[in-house]
Amino acid sequence: MKILGIESTCDETSAAVVEDKRIVLSNILASQAKLHNKYGGVVPELASRKHLEALPIVVDEALNEAKVSIDDIDAIAVSKEPGLPPALQVGYAYASGLATSKNIELIEVNHLEGHISGIWLVHKGDKKKRIPYPYLCLLVSGGHTEIRLVSDKKNQKILGRTLDDASGEAFDKVARILGLGYPGGPIIDMLSQEGDEHFMKFPRPMIDSENLDFSFSGLKTAVMRHVDTLQKDHDQFRKDKTLHKELTSNWVNDVAASFQEAVVDVLVTKTINAANQIGVPIITMAGGVSANSRLRDMMGRTCHENVFELFYPEVEFCLDNAAMIAARGSEVFKRTK
Image (tube, rainbow, N blue to C red):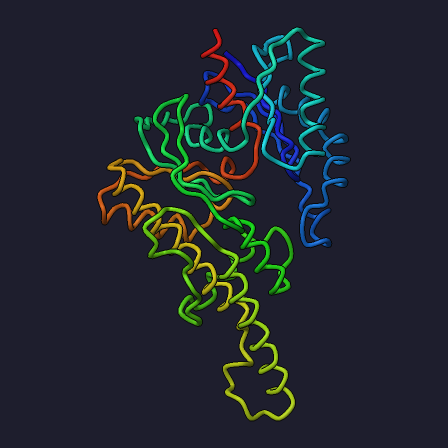
């Protein structure tokens, strides 16, 4: 069984062919990051226009790389929600038109469920992952931060979610405060490796709360206030040379590392608490933020210490991509047959 996946939730135009639910034959992605970088975030109208231009190209490339034709495709899976409405509409219209013209079944996929299905993906020839149900999933992306209990292919339950900013959104906003550009997550991850995570003890919102919800808006505000103070001190040092010489160093890396440490600390602590409360021995991670190297490291060590198994996708399947949409579509398609 071969599924063509189409993804246009935000600023990534992607098409992929997935065989037997897990095996990725192709996964083509056209990024708009450079286009939106100067605006500090995604402009929906520009994103939808670029999706319209890119979709025919990435679909053709996906079919060619997979060495199949559209006639070999059993169904087309497309992101339906959530996401930027103008961007979603373009992808859905294209997928719907293609499915109708070729008399192929169209499968509507929830983007977040797609991220979770991305955990299973492997390239052709690689060993398949075997993740027994039930398991917990820390779902962390640009617009969502949730802990879900995944009981089986069909049933998922949200145990906790963000009450304001998502973790990925917080990364983007702090990167903007530091003047680092968009998208903020990968930049902060890179700079943090040269920074001191103990430079500033930023707050860990709701980390001691008994419930499993998240909040990151207060952390973002704390970073903004601290950066304002550092900038004023640095300007004063340049004028009279009376302040500590440490201010001449690149404190941006230290702020980035301290902020990242606070976010990761909250994500890991909440997830481990959820696993202990529910009594589930397996933890997974999905979504763009799950590619963060510090999160992978800390979650890995903490799971080992607490005797939990940990699974997460390859980095290319953490970000928005059509392979995960095709994977989820395969699950839905099988249930309807």
